[in-house]
Amino acid sequence: MFMKKVLKGFLGIFAVFALFLTLASCFASYSSSSMKSGLEKAGYTVQENPVIVNLDTKSMTGFQSALYGYKTVNGEEDGILILIFDSTANADKAGSTEGSVATETMTIMHRWGKAHAPETDTSVYGVANNIVWAGSSAAKKAAGIF
Image 1 (cartoon, rainbow, N blue to C red):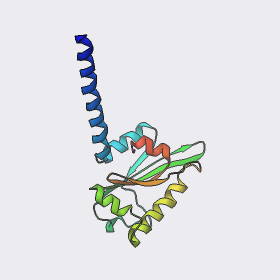
Image 2: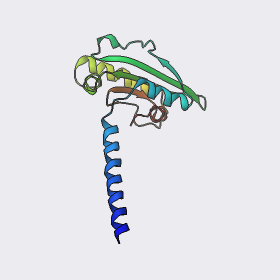
Image 3: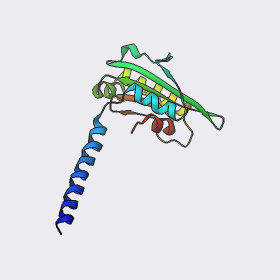
């Protein structure tokens, strides 16, 4: 009887701890190095700070760096472009659908994502914490973006 209570208490504490870790990871910022590592482990070639034509990152508040990961799968390019910001607020601002600069950025990112993801991907761009991303769902998963 006593052991059951101890076990239930232990499991309860463990469940609360697991929930805390899950919630904490939802609010954590993404780092360039961890996303690059995840992409490379999944077989993607990764370029840091590639030249991005038609996307003026210098005018984006809080922009820190960019990653471009790519590989060929069944003869088709599979890739992802990730813009990394110093804060969630600045990523949200860049990824917003309001304002001329943000709308232009998301239009470019959406086009890029459609061009570098399989036709079956329904989500090819988005904002997650401190990043704006565009590309395939497989590359998004490999980068550890949720």
